[in-house]
Length: 81
View 1 (cartoon, one colour):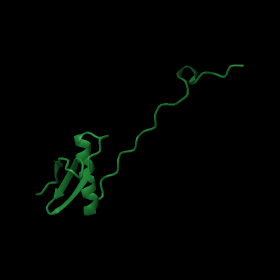
View 2 (tube, helix red, strand yellow):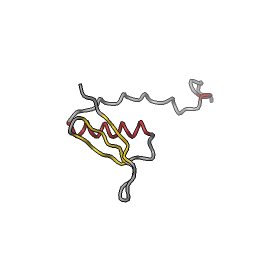
View 3 (cartoon, helix red, strand yellow):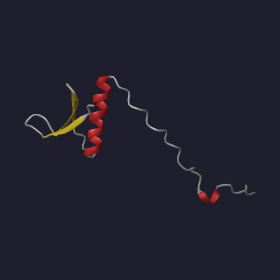
View 4 (cartoon, helix red, strand yellow):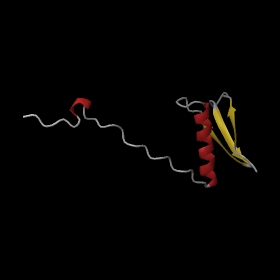
């Protein structure tokens, strides 16, 4: 069984740091995103490869809504007249 592999490509005179992901003879190279750490950059490259291969990644789980924006002291308090 084959697995997806990734490697970090060091900068050259023309290009910055990049991540290469490949499976067999299919590969993609994506630019390093400074907003992400190494694992997140690897994940981005892998997802890009999967997209190229026509594989749909599973949907991200739904994020539950945050707490109410109503101030805690007023939550459920009776109307004052």
